[in-house]
Length: 67
Image (tube, rainbow, N blue to C red):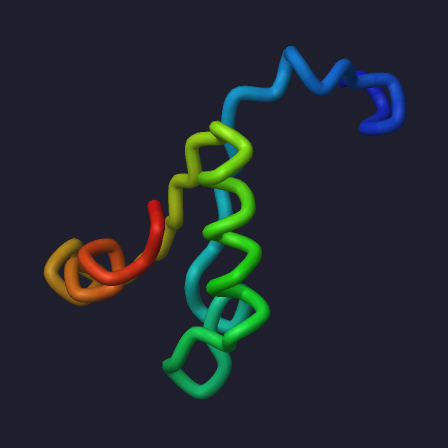
């Protein structure tokens, strides 16, 4: 795998991110994490939030987050 510094921005099409305690704090998304998701989307990148929890648990998040 290449070092991140060697990647060309045009070769990155998306970002995978954990939800629990990465995007959220005590079960709620923080304002700065929400803004980061919006910025990634505005830049044309796909954002895929991932969790080990059941799909139904994360459905309200993906309906309100810019992913």
